[in-house]
Each structure stands twice: as structure tokens, then as C-alpha cells.
Length: 430
Ligand code: HEM
Image 1 (cartoon, rainbow, N blue to C red):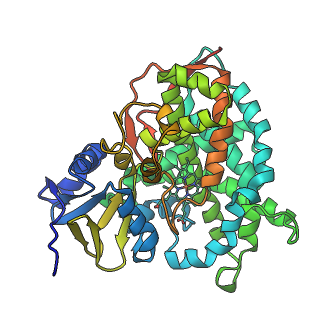
Image 2: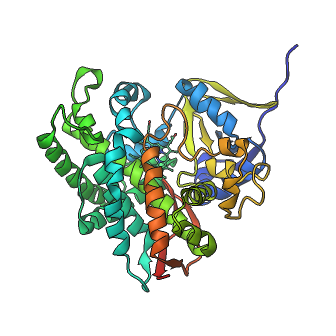
Image 3: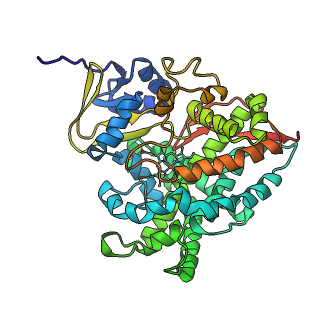
């Protein structure tokens, strides 16, 4: 006996593709939220093109783990990244990544990073102590600088001075802003726009830094010594040959892009929630790991640094939730909308309220629904590092003081979720 399935509910954004894309891009979260409100699988129509929105963690798991080999990152998500920094871990094809991943992934594991991670505290202490009191500072840039200094230390074995880190973090933020605006847009395939020139100048600053660290690492590389991620990349032989300088540089920049922007965004959102929830922020200052972790989890639930991740099938595929089934044609994009999953009213009581305590009593279903680092073979390779960094940084920031933020906080769905217009705030001593 066959079962009948129905098509997912649809919303027409516009009857023309170009206008539809423009309208969608102007208010991505509004359209994604409208689709999410229709159910776990819904479709946005932009002219003849469809964008499927998944807000069900089990469907996401099926796609990304069980059927991981059937899906890839769509060109519109990788081309805007390839333009400024070249091929890297994030943009590499699944085939190339399968060759490279076994050589580098072990070096991203917690145990491999342990000694570097344990030495992070002195960098964190110095940097947090240097944050001034009583004047509004660019918190997003400060978090970007800190994330960069820690990434340089843990991944590349480099102690990056504060002023250099600030300079690179600034250019990185500008470059990623350019990337974020173009991800998913048709314009992403037009690299000659005037703004691309400015973006290339920003990228050049980071490239120069990457060249320096690669040269240094090559000189010090001891084939039998302790390997960090950069050493592992230098010694890797994917497909039997070493990486060229350009390939190595692309990977260093790719790690910065995938790692720093996201970590800086996650820390910025933690500060924003800390400012609005002083009682919870005080609890982080006590440095009890359960309370810090609850604060981190709740930040990543309500304000996930990565708001969603897109996939497209290698060939026609089907997505099924209950009696709803979507046929996904070649070239069509499916977005796993984590921000939407995390705000489901059937999963979380009063989901728009920031309440770390709920994380201490969450159910298995709630726990399983939280996928801030993605899943499967192309999920986040740096998640242990990101969590270790946040666990070390947040109590120090909370001990440094209360935070006052005067601006209205609006989400900006860029490459990572940023605060629109940047996040400015003032530390006030306890
Ligand atoms: C709070 C911080 C972070 C968040 C929320 C985050 C989130 C994610 C997510 C959701 C993905 C998967 C995207 C997809 O499936 O298309 C991803 C991939 C990736 N992340 Fe992270 N990430 C964070 C920090 C880091 C750090 C510190 C690194 C260090 C290098 C890193 C490196 C990467 C790389 C290289 C990929 C691509 C892996 C691949 O293509 O196989 N991330 N991240």
C-alpha cells in the first residue's frame, strides 16, 4: 500500500527571480522566519527558483550525516569566499577535502591542542585587563582581535602583538563583510564590482600576515617535533604531493575566516546578552563551568553565530518530514536554518527570552536540536577550540565588569550573525 505525501507549504517572495532575490536579501531573517513558522520544511519561491528551509534537526541530521555524500555546499556560498582568499578548507570540494581531512583533522582534536589551549590564559588575561573602563569601545573588534590572537597561537604557534592583531582583525572584518553581503546572491559571481577592489586591499593585509607565518613555520618545522595545525598542513601530502604556497595560504586564511569571524560573533552576542541580563552575567563571573556552559549554550541557541548552512544535492534528492516531502532538483538550495530550529515554540518555552537556566534542565530532544557547529563530514572542524576559547574568555570578561550597551541591538545575517552597525559598549568595574 503506497502512502501519499504532500508538498511543503510555500511562500512566494516574488514572481521574478531577480526581484525575489533582492527582496529576500533585504530581509533574510524575516523571510526565513515566515517559512519556519509554516513548519519543519517549507519553501520560499523566488520566481522559478525555490529555496527550501529546514527547521527540523532530524531532517538536518539525515541530510548532513546519513546522506552527507549526496549534498554539497552550493556555489553561491563558496564563490564569494574563494574570490578574496582562494581555495580553502571551507570552499574545497568534498573530493579534495576527503584527501586532506585525515591529515589535518587529528590536529584539531582537543587532545592535540591541549598544551596550546592551556597556555591561552595568559593572552586572555592580558587582553581582558587592557580593555578600558568608562569609555564605549568597539566590542566586536575587541572580540575579533582576541579570537585572532588565540587562533594565531593555537593553530599557528604565533604570538601576535595586540596592535598587529587589531589591524588584521579590522581588515578581516571589512573583507568578511564583503563576503557576507554576497553569499547567496547572484552578484556573488561578479568579482569585478568596484567594491571588490577595496575588498582585495583588505584581503592583502591578511595575506601578507599569512605569508609571514608560513615562512616562519617552514623554517622551524621539525618533522619529528610537536605539530600544530599549520605544521600538519605543511607536512600534508593530499593526493601524494605537498601543498603549494598559495594553497597553504588559502587554508590559513580559510581558518581565520571560518574560525575568527564566528568566534568573535559568538563572543559579541554573549556580551550583548550579558549587558541585558546582568544577573546571568554575574553568574559567569563566578567561573563555575556549569553556569558558564549554560550561558554559552543559551547564547548559541538564541543568537547562533552561524544562523544557517546551505546545501545543494549532487543530483535530484528528496527531503521528507512526516507526510511532507520535497523533491530537491539539482541546483536548488536547501538551508538548514539553525536560528529557526532554536526558536521553535514546540521545543522551547518562550524561545525569545534569554534564559541560561533552561540549559541546565534541557531535555534530550532540546539538546539534540542544538547544532551550532553543523553536523557530518563538513561540520565545524574547530568546534573544540571554539568552545575552549569561549569557556576561558567569558568568565574573565564577566570578572572585568558589567557591560553597558546603549544601542538597539539588531541582528545582521552576514557570513556570521553580526550586530547591525557593530557592537559598541562600555565596561564598568564591579
Ligand atoms: C563559535 C564559533 C564557531 C561556530 C559557531 C562555527 C560553526 C560552524 C559551522 C555551523 C560549520 C559548518 C557549516 C556547514 O555545514 O556548511 C563550520 C565549519 C567550519 N568551521 Fe567552524 N565554527 C566556529 C569556530 C571555528 C573555529 C575556531 C575554527 C578553527 C579553525 C573553525 C573552522 C571551521 C572550518 C574550517 C569549517 C569548514 C569545515 C569543512 O568544510 O569541512 N570554526 N563551523
